[in-house]
Image 1 (cartoon, rainbow, N blue to C red):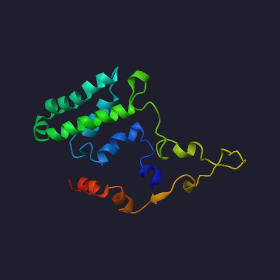
Image 2 (cartoon, rainbow, N blue to C red):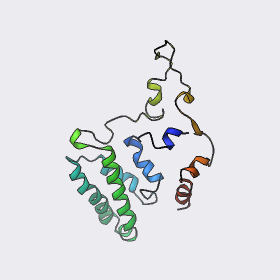
Image 3 (cartoon, rainbow, N blue to C red):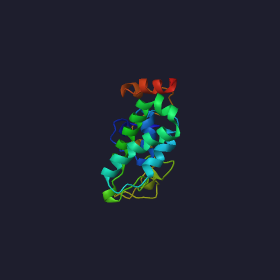
Length: 170
């Protein structure tokens, strides 16, 4: 299910889903073998400063492929470099070592599958100023623009339909 606020980009994506979104959008090549596991390891590593992360994250990705998968390193060096840059961007958007905010410091309260999300307040147990229970009706806060469609029109409107099609054909 997609909401208008998510489609507009007005909702910041929690760190736990940022990598998956970057892969879905093609920022991190989804067909690059081992990138999912390797990216988690690199992003969860501790760096004392943002500057240290800026140096070590791209090197860690490149070194992993150079040492462990030299054939992939040689044949997909552009994809490896793209992944390294995208992972550094994800790190810089979600981790602030100087403020003691690491990967996964805060729960992802988007949605309602991994964490309570909306239901932290929309549980019909919280009461509004006029003594009414806060409803669990999604339409109270969200405009549902795609629910169960196989190829929702909003993807074309946002320019994502071609990107998704390209990922599916790789």
